[in-house]
Length: 536
Image (cartoon, rainbow, N blue to C red; front, side, top):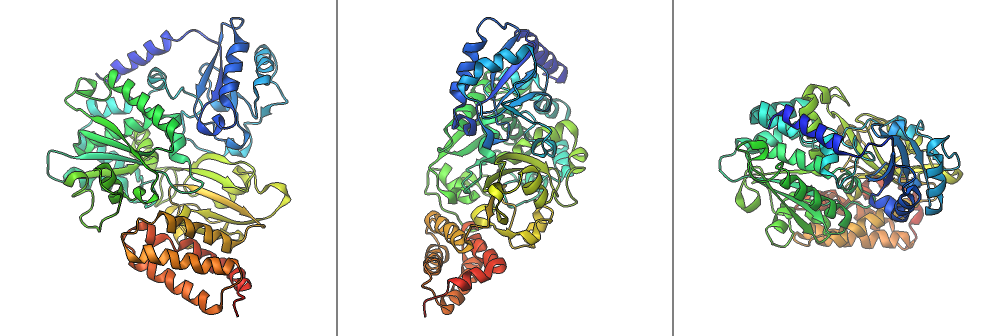
């Protein structure tokens, strides 16, 4: 198969669709489903009936503004989300009014302005199909250009060509570490051995983070296509998606995507009538946060207890069952198809000098517009929180934003103008992580915030190394004393000493970064700690 063959197939899929003038798209991602999207979908189907043969109701992925769900958009068949009429907070009883408005002016009482900065300030690469295509439809994905990048790579590029484009893009791993993707892929490609593996790390465990879940729920084929391109580039024939079982909808849609892609010849043996083959399997994680660490993740896939091991050797050299292994997260793989399609230089033109492309963030906490966004690297925190996020509701003032989850730190108001990229956030004692942002207002106690994240790290510690196993317990005990105004200045000094010890001596990233929320809140909100001292 070549690109012309795929284009012909895409045209066949588009032609086979019933001719419709309008699509009523209902967000059926987990966020909207939790607000009642399924009854809304059913009510719209029932209200449409046979009276509007030129219209259809379609379930689509995440439209982003989760706080306003269930979301429904009405668009021309070929229209994107920006050109549609968007309705928010839709209830089943609104279905008849929405259907009645299809031949007239929009229903203003439910209308959500799509020229709001929440939509207008985004630049979508990873999320370009989210809210537009049916995530369960293989034909729908191909019809919008899906799998063209894979066929382009297989029919027109060598593995070296693929590696060159990914390297030129400047893409860095979106899982938190920010390691250059092209360098990682090239390292695995150079390793000897007939057996190599690709792993997609979908074990998203940060509190407040739902980027990977939403991507898989909205566009699972996009991730599979990126994995297949990666496998071709490094010489792998076997791939795994490691995803936590707490994401049942994402798992279901991923399973459907794998089955349909394999049936159509885009996974399995001799993909696209070439000599390249790739089998993809799903492995469910039991919800251990430590299994997001790549060596613990591999141990879990192998059927062992999910615990990290010292490095080196790194997975690129000796990974799954001792073979060279490439591990990237969901968002990283979702960037690959457009990089191959548009070229590495195109991707590198977006973002900052050392942080290329866009980044998907999950906005949560006390912010008006909670949801999923995608913005160019280098966008300021102030733009994200005040413009896109709509600021703090209820007339309260901003206090801090937690980035990077338990591995990150809290950023106060005086640093909101900083550009969000890998290097800038590190100067503030935090990190971008996988993309979670939890916004806090003036009512938040930063000692309580630090205690919450320390309790999370303490509970999720695998217990293998003493600094993390015992150190997080001791730090949590001191934070608990502080929260109850029972700690002394000596306790506070011991807390800082423990932070340094745990940070420098823990085996893996969980323990090494566990002190970050404490250190950052001490750095910017030390007065709140000192006000809690009362142990005599």
